[in-house]
Amino acid sequence: MALRARALYDFRSENPGEISLREHEVLSLCSEQDIEGWLEGVNSRGDRGLFPASYVQVIRAPAAEPPPPARYANVPVGGFEPLPPPASFKPAAQQPPPEPFPAPPAGYPFPPYGGSYQPSQGSDDDWDDDWDDSSTVADEPGALGSSYPDYEAAGGAPGRYRLSTRSEPSLGSRGGGHPPGHPPPPGGGGAAKSSATVSRNLNRFSTFVKSGGEAFVLGEAAGFVKDGDKLCVVLGPRGPEWQENPYPFQCSIEDPTKQTKFKGMKSYIAYKLVPSHTGQQVHRRYKHFDWLYGRLAEKFPVISVPHLPEKQATGRFEEDFISKRRKGLAWWMDHMCSHPVLAQCDAFQHFLTCPSTDEKAWKQGKRKAEKDEMVGANFFLTISVPTGPGASLDLQEVESQVDGFKAFTKKMDESALQLNHTANEFARKQVTGFKKEYQKVGHSFKCLSQAFELDQQAFSAGLNQAIAFTAEAYDAIGDLFADQPRQDLDPVMDLLALYQGHLANFPDIIHVQKGALTKVKESKRHVEEGKMELQKAEGIQERCNIISFATLAEINHFHKIRVRDFKSQMQHFLQQQILFFQKVTQKLEEALHKYDSV
Image (tube, rainbow, N blue to C red; front, side, top):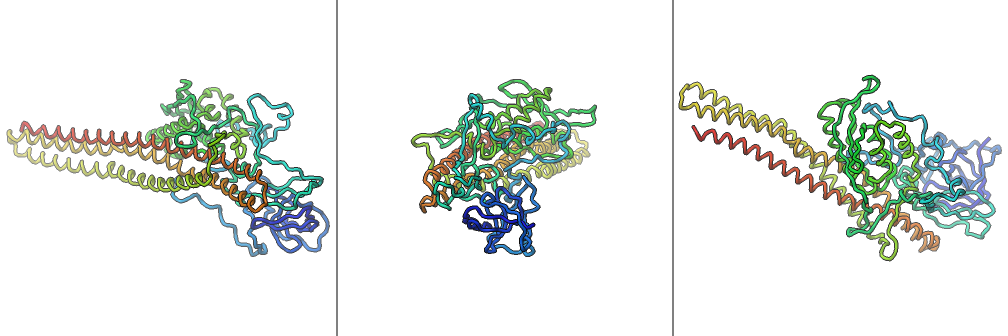
């Protein structure tokens, strides 16, 4: 039995890889399995490509010829979907192998986040030992992606507001849905059989698509937003800014200790966290930090969630590594507490306040965070932006600002990489080369002193002692050089590592904003051509405006903390440099005074 379908409506292809349909036309299907609402097949003119599944009705009848081989038949439901085929199709045997998914931009030390976060797999902190994984988000009622019919029937709840960007046109007597990004099938209302719409991105791996930004801009988001979920953008002296946290706080990370479980069979490092707004200490392992990072990176597509210090499978109980990781986590925590949005996130507050000994409460909070409904396209519903006269953004100016910031981040990333390399090389020279050279000088002075002692003259004893002291001074100066990078260069490199993580995040954030701006330009073009209603285009622009406000607010926050951090770190660096050379000068002065009595 060959798979065939009959076209219910006319469909005009608008993108490469699509084919046009004529009403009542019979098509051969490559597979009955649709991919995100699209089917692949061959029309009566021999064109092969994709078309909306809702525009056809599958018929099962013998066909004279077998259907063409299915290109996407091996794609599992809910799995990754391939890129749509090019406009010109070749027989399956002649198709070139698909190109691999593009790698992250060169120069970024961390992989950019986007879409669904996958925790890193390694031996660090025994990831599978005490997590409650008996149920998944998909198994639970009310999980992400669920609908709200029962809630609506009950009339909602106080403090929750149903926000929707969906347009639900009537499909007339023929009924049925229509694929996003294409006009609804013509109904009984005398509508035109084809009207222009803003097309969807064919690259489903795009961050703009995976983040939910495209679905939001095209008006497909709907959900209930609680008062506590609202993220407010306000107009400040530098433009859009995140509304400040009314109850700012800090959190220290202290006393990393090695602990064991299962009667000593497993070991791990626990860090003591003391949030200033509670004063109650909790203990967290690295895997808890990693889980939190994953939740936040997935939830906030237009916010730069700072990267964690890298994992390490071996040597993770060594003192130097534990100290370095604690400093990295301290920087990470400072940036989390400093961000007006991240600091107030429920998952972060659960991480900071849930008692370490209450395993049940921890798992309940963990499940709640994993079932958060305000993610993806719904996340953008939570963003509240200024309204009224003077509150709208000029999209050309927004584009110019974002392009300027993109150029800035590229240059900053290059400079950070260069400075990190230079500082690392200079620190290496101090620890090895400078120490060795100064101690070589000291050894030479010591040999001279020992030679002078052979004269056995009383009047030269003072000189011999002074030269010996000079040798000791140079030996001590060598040790000072070896210890100094811990005081000044290492903190600079820790800060650079944190900011390189931020810089790796921004290409995805900018991509979401650029994608929204592209949809606005396309909708304006359709309005000018008389192919789209002005009201629909204004809705797209309004939703793009929300993403632009959030993006500019995040850019302003980045600049604010960048100035704060680099000012503080450069002051610390120079202060430590001054103290270092004062110690060197003190050693030399002490040696000099030994010659006064000779």
